[in-house]
Image 1 (cartoon, rainbow, N blue to C red):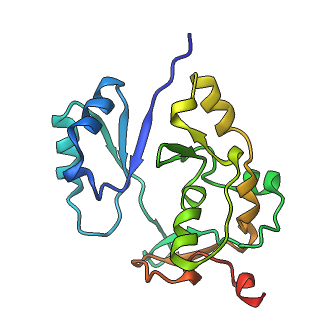
Image 2: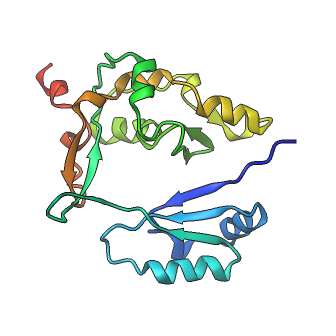
Length: 189
């Protein structure tokens, strides 16, 4: 028998309006809710209290890294829409692939960038492509070993991530500009 502990990570922005089904499911499987704070004005203590009232173990930690002056920043790995990178090397270089899986539209993706390729295509007219090996359909998962195998292997979409061009960017709300996502080289083509 395989035992696994489910850790669900969120920025907390939708927790106050989360449906009962979410709380019931998290409580039933004894999942831990990991809330990562950002300087958005949310009351993270209140959010942790809501979770605890619903019987869900909660951790509030992580958040922004800080530079030597105390300014918050993110590490941004841009996407190169031509997909020139070796997927295996890209997966090995990735800080989130396989350890911060994303659930979107009934599918599990290995990372947030992978889950959002369709959003980028709709918003900016890019033509980033998913292949069947890039995700797992929730309805097709037979056992936890299948998720574990998926989590530990590179995906075709890893070809888009330009890890050597990763930079620290200061904390700021998105301006909804394509330059927040694509590598500078993508604009030279």
